[in-house]
Length: 524
Image (tube, rainbow, N blue to C red; front, side, top):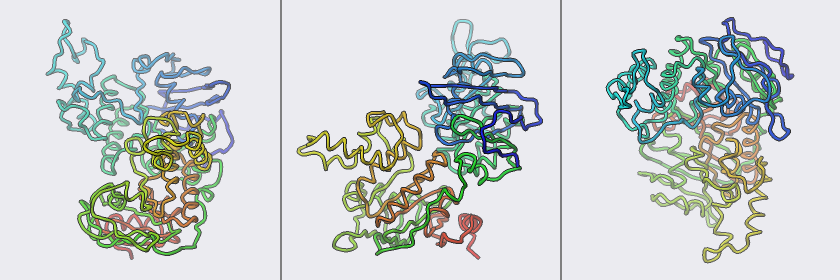
């Protein structure tokens, strides 16, 4: 094993391929705080290297330097053996370094073809986009766009408005744009965060094609299982320093987590409480667009996981329970002071919240936060408690309420006034959790609560969930990460094609058993 847990800038490049990209001693500081400390990295032609680390480890800064968004303080970047200067994003593209950020840069209102060839001038290489008079040659533009998509194994409608594309379609369009610019190095930042399992497979197939072309790929993801699947080498950053690198065949996921977090993987999950109370949620025959006849009981203090492939109906269950989606049939009863109360068929999130049912949605940016301050986001769900006739009764009480939750969930920020969208993904998720923590729900529904979150913040969220359960809340966790469900939950329900195929005790179940059930194979 080639993993080292001490910061070390002398580790050699492990690929036998001559490096296309070589970074040496890259250093960057903000206000006296060093966020990158003499980092080295190499990337060979056709190599897919994972760049790993917790939020704040320095990954984003490294990516921004390569993309021309941020200038380095010291160190050097070499492309094909020659030192290069990247002063801006145009320099990076011109030199052949393309970066696809998590929020894919697609221009709505322009067609797929226009997005792919965006910014191209006229050339004399047979790939002409415009005439000498500046008139677009649409036939040539569409033909070239189709060629580039075909190289990725895609058949998109190049005349379609790009805003109508699926998430994977937008990603493929952005990658095709990088190909059109003859990129030598492609940086992918959390490219599967919004993709289904099937769409992820499409992306990986396209990456295989790029690798065969000799494109060097730097792959950033918090999903370690997919990193092992698609990458050949890895580099781990922690607190701005490179602490480990190697060939993935020579290590394992627990060792990588230990390098990232600085502590053993066994410490990631808190202990189970074991103390369960009365039933707080009773679901019978729940049926929706994808789900059929699902039964579920949840007790106070219990954490129940829901596993399943994308499209199995796992997220629909919590959406119908929370009133975010109307159910077609079935009953849902939730514990109140007078006993179990039946919830109406209608979709009514606000009423469910008043009865003690809260849903933390899967899409954090689209459904979880508003583009405002941390304080405004935390107080959003409980604002009625602090108002009378639509006027805030006490501004100081409102701020104090937000500050208590800010401290309890250890949200790392410059203060309550900081804009929530400027926070890291993990701290954004903590803000969303804080909002629903304030409701003190009897039933807490979490849909992919750690998506796009680093392993250290994941551990903090797991501890928060277990603390919430210890206070008597029943928790349902939907997750595509099987190790997460095994480590966090008491029981796991496996969905297959809309039905609850099996229920496992989390203590003792294996990933293989869960995966077999996810694919419809009955447990042995």
